[in-house]
Image 1 (spheres, rainbow, N blue to C red):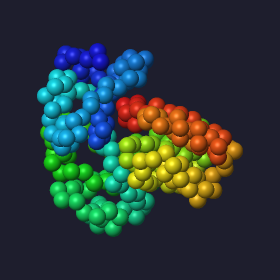
Image 2: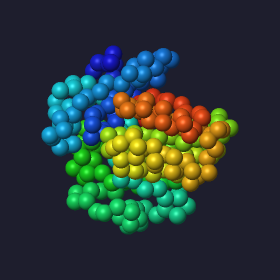
Image 3: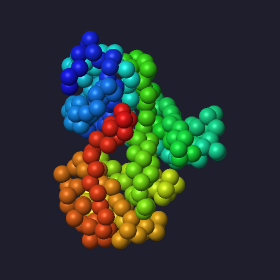
Image 4: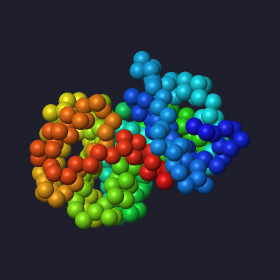
Length: 256
């Protein structure tokens, strides 16, 4: 990363906080080539430490996290999210709606992102201490749940698509699936799973439930697990158009 304390205010910093690592990407809007953001810096976390403890350690070790940036975008990875139509959303009911879908967790606060293009609101839960720490470190940051970035990316892709598209994002212990038909969001949900067979089941089940065409519609597959090639091979028996995409698409969407 070619960034220093003297030039950092020219850069946009994008961060994804995940239980399996922290991911950082930088973009200088004045430079046409996006080489700085094409290969994000990956900070491996200590799984024996809490999320906030790992963040504190990262801040101590990575001097450039203390620099002042033109903008900061933070992406939180969690399967604890739910989506509400914008027309039916009221701020004061956010927590009530969220906990109709998930059991409550101590010290959790419910936040939300509004996606105007899709007339949708994404509610998500985040640790209160973590959120406070993030805003202390990056007071002007825009914080999003990863599902929001997924929907935004799929919306931009579907602008030019003639078919329905599904995007599959995988983590160690879950997958998130989103599908769209010309700006109409069909599904965005998470499923707890760790095995290829389970991932295959959820993808194909949702594909069938949505009535997607196995010959014409497209599956976008975010490749960031070693077993993704095995999954792609199995999926190829049922779906003709499978397109691998960058595992860092959410970082690139945030800073583009």
